[in-house]
Amino acid sequence: MKGPVAIAATAGAVGLVMAAAPARAQENKFDLSLALVETYDTNILRLGEQRTNQPTDNLSTAPRLTLDYSRQLARQRIFANGYAGYVWNNRFDFLNRQDIALTGGADIRVGPKCRATVLGTFVQAQSDLEDLGVVISNVATTTDYSIAASCPRPSGFYPIASAGYFKVDNERRQLRNQNIIDGRVGIGYSLPSLGTAQLFGAFSTIRRARFFETPEGSVRDVTQIRSAGLRVGRDVGTRIKASGEVGYTSADPASPQATPFSGITYSINASYTPISRFVLSAAFGRSVSARGNLGVSYILRDQVDFGARLTVSRRTSFGASVQLSQRDYKGEDPLFVAEPRLSDTQLNAQADVRYRLAQPITLELAARYRQRTAENDFYDYDSFATTLRAMLSI
Image 1 (tube, rainbow, N blue to C red):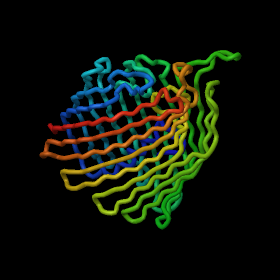
Image 2 (cartoon, rainbow, N blue to C red):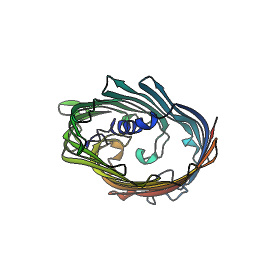
Image 3 (spheres, helix red, strand yellow):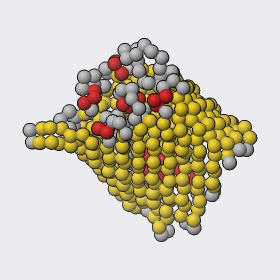
Image 4 (spheres, helix red, strand yellow):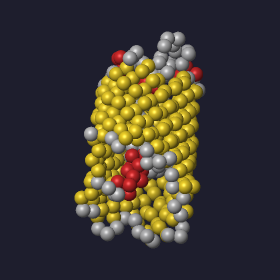
């Protein structure tokens, strides 16, 4: 995580790219593939017993063209990956929709020590019906731009900074449209025997496309988030990696329906590699976030994650993960006034096996279970899905 505020417009994306950069630096590649994704979901409508007694299961078929590109240009590296396709549904064909997710960017080195990662992401797909709260077709287009820069040193102080812009546009639910501008600056300190430490300050401005009438006039739904804290990281040999941060965060919403927040936010991440082919990971934390399409001024989230991956051979690997989160919704859309969600607990558990059948063919079988238990049980549901993915390199 980028910061305890899940000043989340860039937190996850930048963290992923920075972590992946060394792997990309190992080789140039251009992989273009055809993929076919079949998914059976027992509850694609995300409805519980209180909301329907009709069938909610669905089989979807999604052909895709996928790209994985990376190239070294002197000291710099450019990259792009993602897919473009279309989803057909056998029961709920009103959800048939394009499905696009593309990411591109560059790893840039300036001088002997400084580096920056520039990232852009474009996603266009049908919204998850859990987010919308009603059964309706809605294409959500998400764009996310970010830059993270630092001048790390083997020992001593160094600067760090990042900034991002995140935007969601909805075809039907336009009151959900929002944009987020965020930034983070800090001073890092590195000592080989102790690891790294960073003092940071972060901000986020969340602007949503809805207004409230107050005695002083019309007020836009804008939330200001501020955070300051300390981040530390430490690697123990090649087997154990750990990082954590703690900060004081405040959220100041303009919405009269949302209460302010001020308090401690934190995150802890660790991974353990007992053997080279087996990795265990764990994370937990509390954050203030606004990413997504949930129709709120902001969310206070507590979350725990566990994961494992075993690489049996060059052809076969297995993975599993469990995520448990609690979300408190602050400032819900008018759609939820009669039946507010208030808060919920969500369990996600999944497992997968990947097998390279031959040099150009890769198969993946995955299963996922999701359960939502809301303070307002009108929104309770569970869902089980299995996905078979076949990919052919061309």
